[in-house]
Image 1 (tube, rainbow, N blue to C red):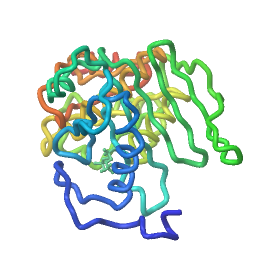
Image 2 (cartoon, rainbow, N blue to C red):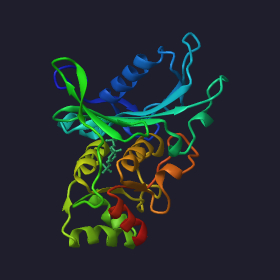
Image 3 (cartoon, rainbow, N blue to C red):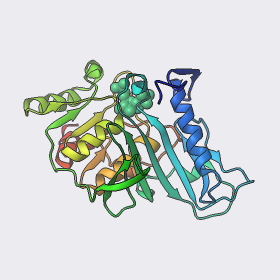
Length: 278
Ligand code: AFP
């Protein structure tokens, strides 16, 4: 309904990343918090749209879980009707003391559950709790997500590469060689500009997505906690890999809530080639 009601366009605010906040970013962030803050399941939440983490108010019962999420991934695609998504990840904390930021700064391997919703030609929920990756499609006639993609496995090698080649000039020689090698191997280039959508396509068809470090962003652009980590758990559960070029994304020890990381993710052999090229 975004084009018909006041949910298109900017709020006029910028977020902790210096990005202009879209109305839908704000709406989605508030909707997720209001849907979950009184469930008695969570102790705290953290989001791309909030500088600090959000402790569940004491008027509500606090639970053993913490949630990290990107309310709208691909915001720059909202107004141009290109598919976008929501990414989430759940950890458990084992003490009743008031939540602290340290509760969030844990390696991705400690995630209990990770998933995303993709708002494309159909709306899908894809998640893992460590027992494989499963996809559900929303049936709008009954308002239910129905199992449509059970036990998703990503092909060991793909034929698609996804990267913003506009950044080519700022890449290291090794990254340029890697991308050139995909071209000379006859891979197709596909880049939507919404991580969830590029990842989802490669998950189903095989391929590799990368957002490497470059001269303008030495740590890459994507956020470790609520972009890279959840998708890394999903891709590993589907037989693929996710790396920053030197280590698995899931083994990185986070230092800050909104830290960035270089990311290469997708078919195992394509990610192996990237690590070998560096
Ligand atoms: P937004 O949510 O600000 O649109 O950023 C999207 C994103 O984090 C990720 O979804 C894309 O893969 C990547 O940034 C696109 O970045 P470029 O526009 O620099 O290619």
